[in-house]
Amino acid sequence: MTAHLDDLGNTVTLTAIPARIVSLVPSLTEAMALSTSGVLIAATDWCSHPADLDVARIGGTKNPDVSAIAAMAPDLVVANAEENRREDLDSLRDAGLAVWVTDIRTVDQAFASMARLLEAIGATTTEWLDAARREWGDLPAVPDDERRRAIIPIWRRPWMHVGSDTYAGDVLRRLGIDNALAEAAERYPRIPLEELPAHELVVLPDEPYAFTPDDGPGCFAPVPCALVSGRLLTWYGPAMLGASATLLASLQETITGPSEPERP
Image 1 (cartoon, rainbow, N blue to C red):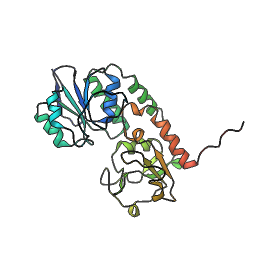
Image 2 (cartoon, rainbow, N blue to C red; image 1 turned 120 degrees about the horizontal axis):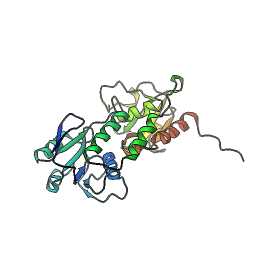
Image 3 (cartoon, one colour; image 1 turned 60 degrees about the vertical axis):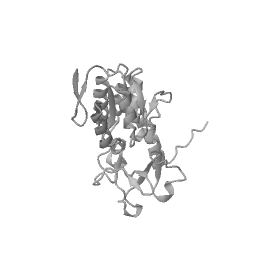
Image 4 (cartoon, rainbow, N blue to C red; image 1 turned 180 degrees about the horizontal axis):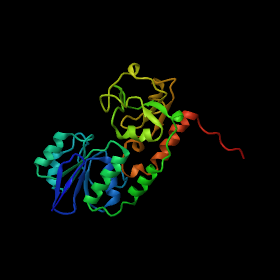
């Protein structure tokens, strides 16, 4: 029997290396699926990676089927403080289940949190984690005169934006994009467009709201809008591999315009 501390400081007691895990976090579902073999028995409807994941589905991150999870009697349930509701996690604990809660708000926290979790579940294939850590650690500093101040909407009707203390905000900060709402009182404030602070750029991810060239940019004209992958912006885990280069390409194309093709 081994006692671990999750990201919130809760003691998680495991009688052995977990052989049956339920994941309530899409990004961590992918991380565990690629790092272990056959231990995931259930995941949420939103757990879309890896594409060939073949496990039971137990509802969404905000409305998991607690009774169904309890009936499966997993060795461990993996959750996230932001994505999952405390009352659902308390119900799972009341059912006698071990619940590990992650709380990831920066790139560095992502690496530390995932390393602890993967070690606790006996993961053996974690080369991707080391590669991602090197990738993000090797990013050059962006000079002050090249940085941009941005708004990052995540929803409309009503408009919601990335605010303070978020993983997405830290990802963009490392890429030279400063969140104009980084000092907001809330992590995801609801602010009408006419009340937004000054900004030079708008970053529009394709999840959780699916912003597209025809749905979103027109609301911010003439401010340039960068359409980016929401998965690369908000998913920690294997999605971090290659994310910095892909996100930078999308951002730079918006800021400087598409590059001219080479002449033969």
